[in-house]
Image 1 (cartoon, one colour):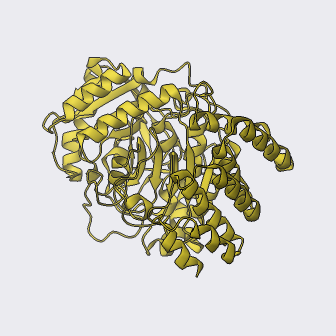
Image 2 (cartoon, helix red, strand yellow):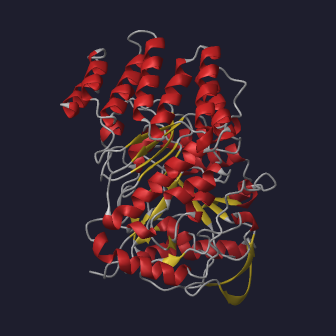
Length: 518
């Protein structure tokens, strides 16, 4: 998605239409029947015995997911981030194919066509999911100098391994993903034998990876709760597709009763802007972690699934300071997506499809690869492949108190009144519930909802009401004053916005917003 993207966007889209025309495009808006599937029984865990800490992490993950010891596979390979195409084949791809044959993990037969680019001899496989543990290389280096745009032969190790069961296929460029927009869950989809879901338990350090594993298990059992954040970049022309993905994500969150903050400026959400309980974050378009997430003290909600779209977001995924995936994981995310080389926008993960499937109860790996049109390409998925953040329905934490209960109650009411014509009734119900619970937090969430549905003045009034009810000078009151000022700015009542900010001169986000208002 560099500047060269605009020139080749039409070419890539044409290739996609040609390769993917045969796919079924019925989208799974239904809740997936996952409860009768045990994905751990189909999971292989691969670690590098020559990389310090890799084996210990593999054993920790296997124990957490009750994956049997015979499904932990040591794979001696390069200790570096990068690997040549030749070494990938000799150290990773071919040894793995031999292990599948040796252990009878798959059954093979005559060659069959999957689509116009892929063929396989695999008839069935006991393993369909592969978890790569920190220590396995993640970038396959370019072997052809100066390729034409869209015809590069570099790739992520992970995206290449998704095609482990395929016969030799054409390089360069991507191969069409047979699972893209499938109308069936992966475990019921037998049209693509030899295809694998790949996710990587990797990151800046072992402690972060172990926390990612533990958070996924804990939140899957309890249910993910909190707010969603969308950061638009106001791009157009060839980049409009990315903006549309994010807008569709916002619609999905609203319909599913997830409180939402949307930043509608071209810049990233500014430093120090309060984003409490952020369980879902999707945005673009900067080359390195910046804005509100640059602060090392920022923390996502436990179990958070987050992503910042950029061409090289995962180019140095083991760094805590470079690009995006590593820093986001260090700030508490349980899962993220990224690209190790230039992917071009049309062949990256479609955020709206990813969120659609994740919200339906799918696993992280299933949602990520369902939403990705190309394989043998640039994407990596970082997190427990079996993680189902919405295994428990939204609103299932009614037994808890405090904010978690507010989020559950908010979800219940919003989803009970899904139509625009129900908006007045919904708002009255939320206000009654907030009064009954003496909860300014619920009023704040209602204020955010009004802002997302286009009523900035009503949003500002509700946020003012919530701020008055919060304890004086508390972080909650400061946050709602900032949100109130932003709503008033949207309403173009700059004088009132400045007045709201005067009550919180001590907050570090106040000064920059005042400058913007002036």
